Image: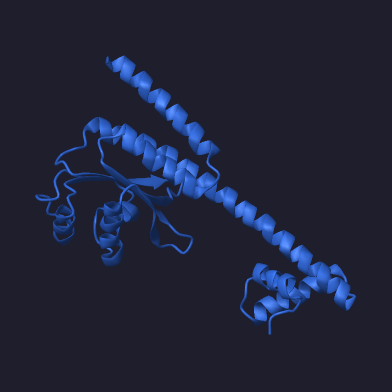
Length: 233
């Protein structure tokens, strides 16, 4: 296959990926499409994604093999390794051979024992002014020096697609949760208005006071009232 044919094939593959990511119903399905594409398009045997949670800590979002979960766990527990560095510094980390790379000796020794000899960690970052890091795409191979310059270039393109898709999926999930919360609060207000013969403002004030007094989210107070017809003690 000529270079021009390879370029056309890559363009077609990314176009198909963009459609799959757009059609994915949620964050989990979006990430699964990303790691599966990585296995097909790159010189990796395993792939995974770690994402920042809303609480600000990273967690494993998807892996194609249990060995990737082990690779991630070793870093997330110790807060040391290429994944952690890629997340913190928003920089791509390439390890050509875990048996000779000396940057994280304890981690590379453990990972080499798992059969992983080379890795490529690419940050997933939104394109806004703050360059917010969403997570990291990790690619792994049992072969030393598995990743070429072309692999790294394709991984960066994949990371860009994934970053936008994850941010979009999270936004849609947040909006859906907000709509759901408004519906629950509306139902709970209706119950209070009927039971205590109060207007909407008073019913909302009652829910808000119970939320503050019990240190419970307003949505959860509303849900409890709907489920039990009682306000929390």
